Length: 341
Image (cartoon, rainbow, N blue to C red):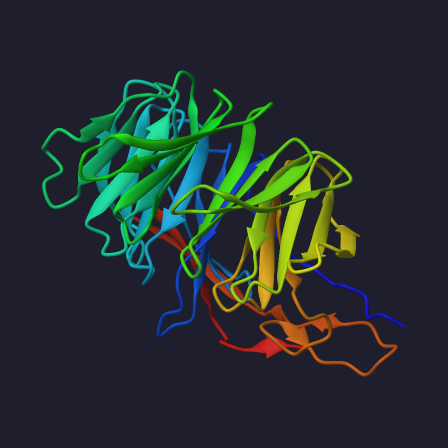
């Protein structure tokens, strides 16, 4: 008998969760940031979902959010025509980068020295964070709003996905377009996997895997329902996807066989990502929640406690917490520092 998946539900947002991202693994574990239409991006401990703090300052829906590799910086993209850079340790706002329209996506270079943005004005912008007063480099070419933009190939190139039904590869030094992929429908999500140079693209019911350097198709899978987001496991054993039917699907990457499906949300799934260690994946939904799902059900990890076959997987829940607020940063402290089973 297969063990039942018991997701960990992370509440706190009051509107749909539209984007999420994990940091790399640091000395303090790894972290998770979520973007929400309530305009209040949240930072959490990645393996437990424990809320650390809320970044306050945007005056509109937040469409994109990311963390740098060591979780010292965060960046957000919003409907108030700004992208913001934050100190992810103190919660302080570091920079506000004004745009001419809604900003949808933000991405740090590996060394956190530059920030890539894109949005409804159809332009890609590269900001030098050491000289924020300097005008950004701009890349034009898309004919409709940019939904996602990512660094790739050791930050030598840029990938962008747009509502113009294209994904484009750009050379960073020349700012010239290298190659374009054209689809029958708008791309719903894009993920870049540096190890192996793979880009994961979803459109309609399709989940497609391309070589990020050549944009040659590696493989494609058709899902049972329209897909909004997909993520490849770090070891490339599995990939997960979520979409309009409220479900999370898990597939074998080699055989493309559907392994599992779970309905845990009460609205369409907008975003899904694997943790950097591959032990869990997170999903964000129209229902305003994030959920954490185990890759290997029944394994002791984070707040999940190992159980005997036939028993239900249990969760250890945080005990007593205290909220404080300073400089626009709401932070939650675990007062007792313990968990109860």
